[in-house]
Length: 157
Image (cartoon, rainbow, N blue to C red; front, side, top):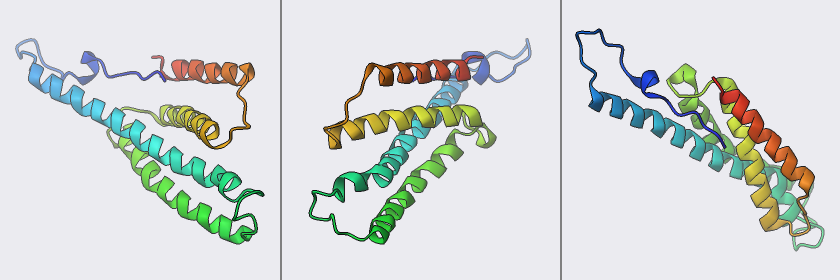
Protein backbone atom coordinates (compact mmCIF):
# COMPACT_ATOMS: atom_id res chain seq x y z
CA UNK A 1 0.00 0.00 0.00
CA UNK A 2 1.37 3.38 -0.97
CA UNK A 3 1.16 6.12 1.59
CA UNK A 4 2.14 9.71 1.05
CA UNK A 5 4.11 10.82 4.05
CA UNK A 6 4.24 14.46 5.03
CA UNK A 7 7.16 16.35 3.54
CA UNK A 8 9.36 18.85 5.30
CA UNK A 9 7.46 21.65 3.55
CA UNK A 10 4.11 20.29 4.75
CA UNK A 11 5.21 20.20 8.39
CA UNK A 12 7.50 23.17 8.62
CA UNK A 13 6.08 26.17 10.37
CA UNK A 14 6.06 29.22 8.14
CA UNK A 15 8.90 31.47 9.23
CA UNK A 16 9.97 34.82 7.94
CA UNK A 17 13.48 35.33 6.55
CA UNK A 18 14.62 36.70 9.89
CA UNK A 19 13.41 33.66 11.85
CA UNK A 20 15.50 30.45 11.68
CA UNK A 21 13.87 27.03 11.20
CA UNK A 22 13.44 25.13 14.44
CA UNK A 23 14.48 21.59 13.41
CA UNK A 24 13.46 19.99 16.69
CA UNK A 25 9.93 21.31 16.16
CA UNK A 26 10.05 20.00 12.61
CA UNK A 27 11.01 16.51 13.85
CA UNK A 28 8.31 16.54 16.53
CA UNK A 29 5.69 17.55 13.96
CA UNK A 30 6.85 14.80 11.59
CA UNK A 31 6.73 12.14 14.33
CA UNK A 32 3.29 13.33 15.39
CA UNK A 33 2.01 13.06 11.80
CA UNK A 34 3.57 9.60 11.41
CA UNK A 35 1.95 8.41 14.64
CA UNK A 36 -1.43 9.37 13.16
CA UNK A 37 -0.65 7.42 9.98
CA UNK A 38 0.44 4.34 11.93
CA UNK A 39 -2.47 4.59 14.39
CA UNK A 40 -4.99 4.93 11.56
CA UNK A 41 -3.65 1.96 9.61
CA UNK A 42 -3.36 -0.29 12.69
CA UNK A 43 -6.88 0.55 13.87
CA UNK A 44 -8.24 -0.10 10.37
CA UNK A 45 -6.45 -3.47 10.34
CA UNK A 46 -8.11 -4.40 13.64
CA UNK A 47 -11.48 -3.09 12.46
CA UNK A 48 -11.34 -5.05 9.22
CA UNK A 49 -10.33 -8.21 11.06
CA UNK A 50 -13.53 -8.04 13.11
CA UNK A 51 -15.56 -7.06 10.06
CA UNK A 52 -14.31 -10.02 8.02
CA UNK A 53 -14.97 -12.38 10.92
CA UNK A 54 -18.49 -10.97 11.35
CA UNK A 55 -19.29 -11.14 7.64
CA UNK A 56 -17.70 -14.48 6.73
CA UNK A 57 -16.85 -16.29 9.98
CA UNK A 58 -20.28 -17.90 10.21
CA UNK A 59 -19.61 -19.68 6.90
CA UNK A 60 -16.76 -21.51 8.61
CA UNK A 61 -17.82 -21.80 12.23
CA UNK A 62 -21.51 -22.53 11.58
CA UNK A 63 -20.92 -24.59 8.43
CA UNK A 64 -23.06 -27.54 7.36
CA UNK A 65 -20.46 -30.03 8.54
CA UNK A 66 -19.77 -28.36 11.91
CA UNK A 67 -21.22 -29.14 15.34
CA UNK A 68 -23.14 -25.85 15.12
CA UNK A 69 -24.88 -26.46 11.80
CA UNK A 70 -28.34 -26.46 13.41
CA UNK A 71 -27.84 -23.07 15.09
CA UNK A 72 -30.79 -20.81 14.24
CA UNK A 73 -30.10 -17.99 11.79
CA UNK A 74 -31.17 -15.34 14.32
CA UNK A 75 -28.46 -16.55 16.72
CA UNK A 76 -25.83 -16.35 13.99
CA UNK A 77 -27.00 -12.81 13.16
CA UNK A 78 -26.68 -11.77 16.82
CA UNK A 79 -23.17 -13.24 17.01
CA UNK A 80 -22.23 -11.33 13.85
CA UNK A 81 -23.68 -8.11 15.27
CA UNK A 82 -21.65 -8.63 18.43
CA UNK A 83 -18.49 -8.93 16.38
CA UNK A 84 -19.47 -5.90 14.28
CA UNK A 85 -19.66 -3.83 17.47
CA UNK A 86 -15.91 -4.33 17.93
CA UNK A 87 -15.35 -3.46 14.28
CA UNK A 88 -16.90 -0.05 14.91
CA UNK A 89 -14.94 0.39 18.16
CA UNK A 90 -11.79 0.43 16.02
CA UNK A 91 -13.12 1.89 12.75
CA UNK A 92 -14.63 5.09 14.15
CA UNK A 93 -11.46 6.16 16.02
CA UNK A 94 -9.33 5.22 13.00
CA UNK A 95 -11.32 7.51 10.73
CA UNK A 96 -11.35 10.35 13.24
CA UNK A 97 -7.60 10.11 13.91
CA UNK A 98 -6.81 9.82 10.21
CA UNK A 99 -9.25 12.44 8.88
CA UNK A 100 -7.84 15.78 7.80
CA UNK A 101 -11.03 17.32 9.21
CA UNK A 102 -9.75 16.34 12.68
CA UNK A 103 -6.07 17.13 12.14
CA UNK A 104 -5.15 13.80 10.56
CA UNK A 105 -3.06 13.27 7.44
CA UNK A 106 -5.75 11.79 5.12
CA UNK A 107 -8.63 13.14 3.09
CA UNK A 108 -11.96 11.33 3.16
CA UNK A 109 -11.25 9.69 -0.20
CA UNK A 110 -7.78 8.57 0.91
CA UNK A 111 -9.23 7.03 4.07
CA UNK A 112 -11.76 5.09 2.00
CA UNK A 113 -9.15 3.75 -0.40
CA UNK A 114 -6.84 2.72 2.46
CA UNK A 115 -9.78 0.93 4.11
CA UNK A 116 -10.65 -0.91 0.89
CA UNK A 117 -7.09 -2.14 0.35
CA UNK A 118 -6.84 -3.25 3.98
CA UNK A 119 -10.20 -5.03 3.63
CA UNK A 120 -8.92 -6.96 0.63
CA UNK A 121 -5.67 -7.91 2.36
CA UNK A 122 -7.47 -9.06 5.53
CA UNK A 123 -10.02 -10.99 3.48
CA UNK A 124 -7.32 -12.78 1.49
CA UNK A 125 -5.48 -13.80 4.66
CA UNK A 126 -8.72 -14.85 6.38
CA UNK A 127 -9.91 -16.94 3.45
CA UNK A 128 -6.49 -18.58 3.02
CA UNK A 129 -6.41 -19.52 6.73
CA UNK A 130 -10.01 -20.65 7.22
CA UNK A 131 -11.25 -21.70 3.78
CA UNK A 132 -8.77 -24.12 2.31
CA UNK A 133 -10.97 -24.67 -0.76
CA UNK A 134 -10.61 -21.03 -1.91
CA UNK A 135 -8.10 -20.67 -4.72
CA UNK A 136 -6.78 -17.28 -5.74
CA UNK A 137 -6.23 -16.96 -9.47
CA UNK A 138 -4.34 -14.60 -11.73
CA UNK A 139 -7.55 -12.57 -12.12
CA UNK A 140 -7.54 -11.95 -8.36
CA UNK A 141 -3.91 -10.85 -8.47
CA UNK A 142 -4.57 -8.51 -11.41
CA UNK A 143 -7.58 -7.02 -9.62
CA UNK A 144 -5.45 -6.44 -6.51
CA UNK A 145 -2.80 -4.73 -8.66
CA UNK A 146 -5.48 -2.40 -10.02
CA UNK A 147 -6.38 -1.47 -6.44
CA UNK A 148 -2.73 -0.64 -5.77
CA UNK A 149 -2.74 1.54 -8.90
CA UNK A 150 -5.90 3.22 -7.57
CA UNK A 151 -4.09 3.97 -4.31
CA UNK A 152 -1.25 5.54 -6.27
CA UNK A 153 -3.60 7.85 -8.16
CA UNK A 154 -5.66 8.76 -5.09
CA UNK A 155 -2.50 9.79 -3.19
CA UNK A 156 -0.75 11.47 -6.13
CA UNK A 157 -0.54 15.22 -5.61
